Length: 400
Image (cartoon, rainbow, N blue to C red; front, side, top):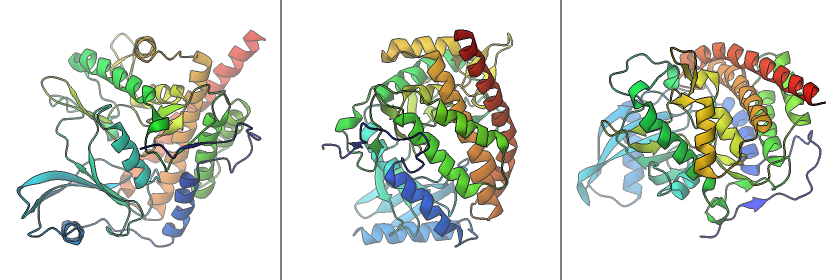
């Protein structure tokens, strides 16, 4: 199917044009303010989820519907997730599926329709869970959600017990070579995907050879900050101004996963083969440096005994860059990479000190304790913003 993705006008306005963002993103963020007033949110019980799923499948004309082995899945500071088995007269053996459903507010408020579109587009390109149903507006499920086929595998080696929230602090050690190679190869495949000829009608691409790829993201997350801020943070304000004034040109926009890191891929044991790349909800069309910079964040990596930093617990930064360039054919510009490291640290500060704390304070999420805890990570990203901006300005002074 031909894509309905449209490129923005070549003439890009001021870096302070706050309205230059994807319409569907703006719609979702503005809708959050309406949902916020409907709280507090109460996590769904197993009985409620079984009833929701039974109604869904009966409405699709299935008979003899039976929902069994319903399990709330661990993790997920954004969505309520349940694994379940669906049996009906047409399939008495049953299928194992996963329901991913929105609470009223999340640490990242996103669109299930966009998530479903990109996963369907990437099926057969990289390993992804197959989407079998999407309720973009929550008409059938009662709240937006999607259902995928269950994927087997693990997000960490079974012999490893120590790990923080969402994979933070994990090292893969003996698995690192096998997983690291696939981690890079799959990222290259994502960036090489022909998004312009895919069905991504809920996406709007930034114009090539402009600053728009970066500014779309700055506008997205500054909009979130203005909606969700608990109290002003001067470093966040500084970061936004710096990012607007220093936005790089993106020559060729690519599909960006936007949460490509430790904890968001699955693999099988003992082969180490990737079985799924997960959590596509933040994906967009943008600059390839953005994904690289996200994977490199300090909070998502670990250190070897010799002090070397391992990107997403897998491989050293220089090796990650060189392997990516070889696999993708894309050039990594270190100045542009540093810009997106600052942008990503800004984004994480907004999520941790804004959206997460706001959702917890309003009692509009099922993970209020986790979201409150993540607020403490905000200081890590503020420190990173300051360091990286200082480094960027020092490098500029040296060049001049």
